[in-house]
Length: 101
Image 1 (cartoon, rainbow, N blue to C red):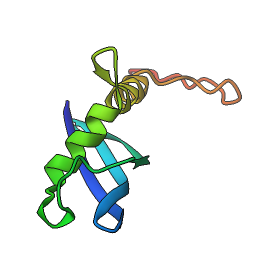
Image 2 (cartoon, one colour):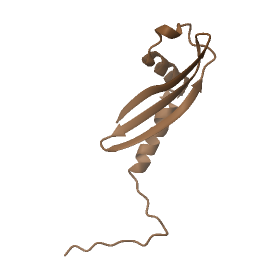
Image 3 (spheres, rainbow, N blue to C red):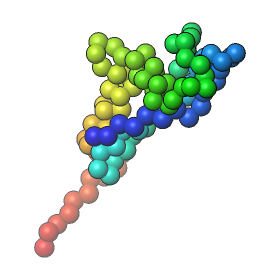
Image 4 (tube, rainbow, N blue to C red):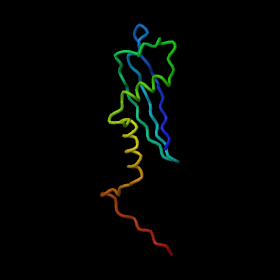
C-alpha cells in the first residue's frame, strides 16, 4: 500500500501558519481511498512562511495526528481499504447464481 499526503491549501496570519487543508490518498493496486481535512495550528514552529516546504507542513500534520504510535488519518484509510476487500451482499437484492455449463 502506498500513502501520499498533499497540502492543498494553507492559511497564514502575519507570516504564521494557522491552518492547512490536506488530502491523503492510500492506494493498493487498482483500489484507492482518500481523506481530506483541515488542521489548525497555534504556531508554525518558528519557520518563516516563505521558507516552508510541503514536506515540513505534512510532517507537522502527521505528527499532530499521531496517537499511540499510529497516525490516525492513515489508520482510518487502512480500515476503509480493508472494508473494500470485503464486499457485502445487499439484503434487498436477490442472490444471483451462475451456472457453469
